[in-house]
Image 1: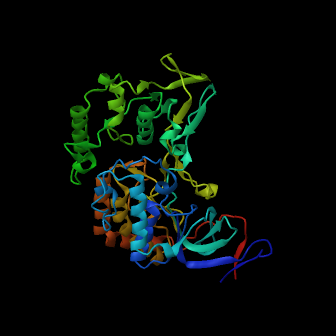
Image 2: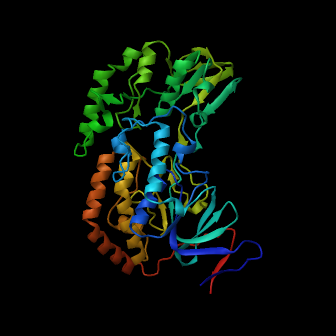
Image 3: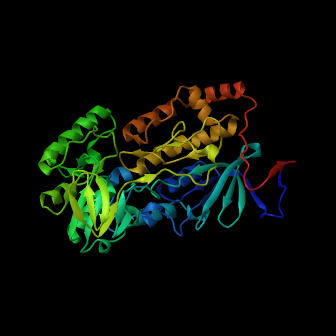
Length: 452
């Protein structure tokens, strides 16, 4: 039995020790909820927003479309409607996720307007979760699906700018750009989308990139490029095919006044965009190198040139962040969460990091495959005392070095993991015998919990 010693200071603790908690009800959170439901694993789910959908509900601009194709973005077991285009819009995506939640009856477990303020390990390998309403709960495990498109990363500028500086996360509608002299910083998908929109409605658009990117066309010969790549292709072959498509579609970087990228294709998250090269050729987007300094209404670039602007839009990415975790559990290095199997620590059981990486391709097909992998390991975790991450470590798995991944390689790895699952189970029980006294290290939070 678990009791609380300082009830006079806090609300009663809600014991839900037979359940997991899913944090987030976006694409990944909904996919994990359906996977747990399908395997009869009890769970609760919370989301900080007032509706489901995650970034597709509250974080994207009105004119956004997916860059991966409908075919690989949809959940494998819940296809998007045939009426959807190859590249569905933000509204399409919101409608799809709502249909997914309704079809699998997921809403009954979702609590909206529930921000998680603290998650910490307590006695008996349980996890205490504190919510924004002051409620404290105990869970056997926590699945963190809070996404990676919310904690904005801004560049460090020298000087001062008299105009407005926003992040692409703050961009919602073309009217924010209309008639303005716009500087967009960054070469990723969002930055290039905003630059193309500014080229259409703005008075001027400059696109500043520290180094050139590989602009990959969204389609080739009428087929989404993401669908051209097949599961059996090794990465070098995928890279070769993509390079050929780029050359046949756009030509060389020097044809656009751009320098050659200093990285190989796929070594950074790909930029799928047809419009930026098009508008550069039409003079509606002016490419510039990195920003050197801000000076009133002007911006100076590292090549010494200067331009006047009304608005700077920073498409400079996001931090992977888990502000509700104590310092002992902050294992993020750059954009990489140092966990095994994409989710598991080797020294704590019951905490799972889902969806923090960025694979080339749509999230739905990956989550459809990963869901079964995860639930099998959650059930295995119930049968052993040591963390799943320790088992995977003992099997020789290495910690990730990058947040980027080839989805086809991930599919092959998941398939192999399912084939070898009995071997994983055997190793798990060997580890259990090797570490019979394992316990999560308790982290002192804002409440004292004692066992009686």
